[in-house]
Length: 116
Figure 1: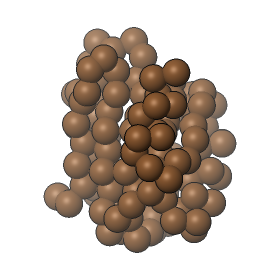
Figure 2 (figure 1 turned 135 degrees about the vertical axis):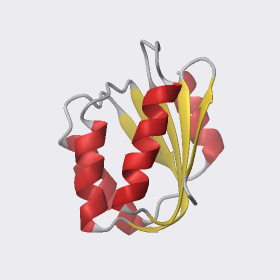
Figure 3 (figure 1 turned 180 degrees about the vertical axis):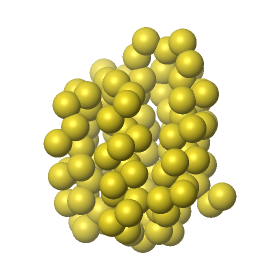
Figure 4 (figure 1 turned 120 degrees about the horizontal axis):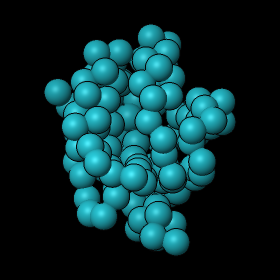
């Protein structure tokens, strides 16, 4: 799988998305995320979209289904194109369990915001 997810202490999931994100990859990343965050009370996401090409409609639907099951404190996204930012803002605004999200140009900016 070309997508990657890893856990960083104390409470950050680092997600790297490349090319188009398929429906199957969304479900696989979600399964891995659930395993990595077991026992965490707070979950923050750091998301690298610098190599992402697009989010097909079926993957968008899977994102809505999968992300709706996990509470998120903050989601910091960096490297997203304008098109991906528009789609991402829509998806994240309609999910009540996403408390805060922001888009950044660089990973450093995103990490700084997560630490605030």
